[in-house]
Image 1: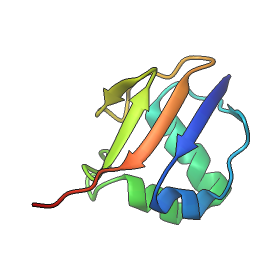
Image 2: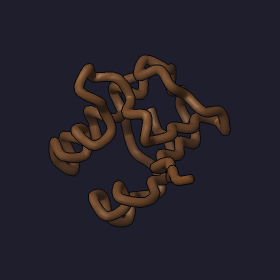
Image 3: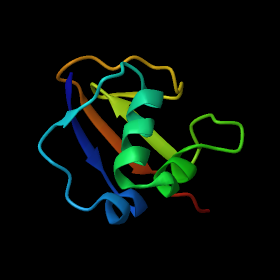
Length: 90
C-alpha cells in the first residue's frame, strides 16, 4: 500500500526529505510509526508516542485532512498523511 507522508518540525530533521510515497504493509498509524522507526531509528517512535504508547499530545496526525488521535486509526492506499508538532504558548 502506498501513502503520501509529509512531516514538519523536529520530525523533518529526523527523516530528512521523504520520498514522494512510502510503501507500508500495515493499515494503521501504529504501523506507520513502526515503519518510520525501522527506517529512521527508534528516536522517532519515542518522539511520537507517550509513555503509555499512545500518540503524544504534542503532535497532530492528519489523514485525508482529518485530525486523528487514535494510534489505531485506519490508513488506506493513497492516503495523504501529515504529521506536525503542535505549538503551545500563552
